View 1 (cartoon, one colour):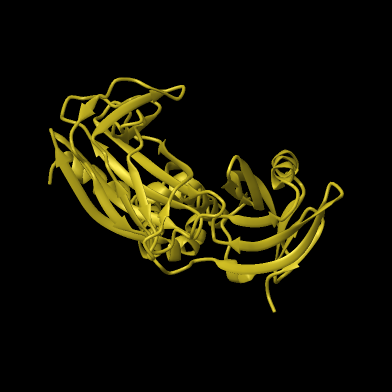
View 2 (cartoon, rainbow, N blue to C red):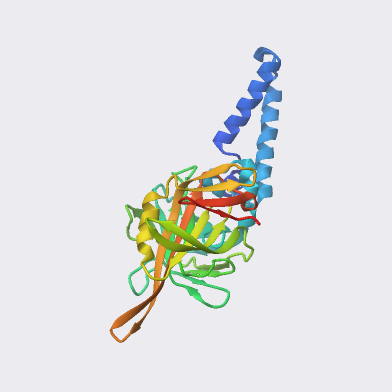
Length: 353
């Protein structure tokens, strides 16, 4: 086993520095309460700390969630199993032109999929930039070569699709870990069971949203299927909702371990006005309540979309319903089965019978 593969294996089973320090601090504190520190046998303390570290690593392995994803989401070991229904380990390796792309895992629910990959450049290269992307050059000049197809053959046409560069333990090496984030816009079908085809022929460094000329070229294209099992709780609704003196309809609420998604529609006025109001005023106006009465606050948002349906007759458009999809991120990882209700701008919607 070469040094890189050994480093990879160790990284998969190692706790973070914060976890290691916290465990060792607890051990020393407990031991000092029982007897003076000078009488402690340092070897015993170290062995005990190592055992606890291995225990934490084993917990992460049992959860099935890649260690890089746990670090990215800031998930504690005790919460890792809540992400297990969303996580599917993968073993896809694409090699070309001295570079290797390893597809490690997909983490998905109905409205978001994250594909974890590691890109390895040739020996001697240094990948120490803040942002990297993979893509290709399309006829329209775009660099995101993707196609997402639903089980019934329908193609997902729009949404938020981007690369995120994760923290690197060794910025001076030739490896970088990336997350490909997919979130479809309102009106698009669920991602569950979809096939994702990525055409990846160029590896770029991106600074301030501007792509430099490719660092490496090759063909690292791959396909995968997003799991069909739904890790969340979906509730279709016909719920009137008043905001800013106007009535719209909440059409669905979806809760997964990572997020709360609210869908609404409006038949006459433009929901884009409500969309803007929700975007500007969500903080403090949305929360979840567990069956035990705990209130879980929303601390961030994901991409939000509005979509207007219509058809053209001659030179005029006939507008149908307007749809909005709003994705919110709770303050912690949640168990959808334990969520009793959602409060959305003063309206409380029960999720349990």
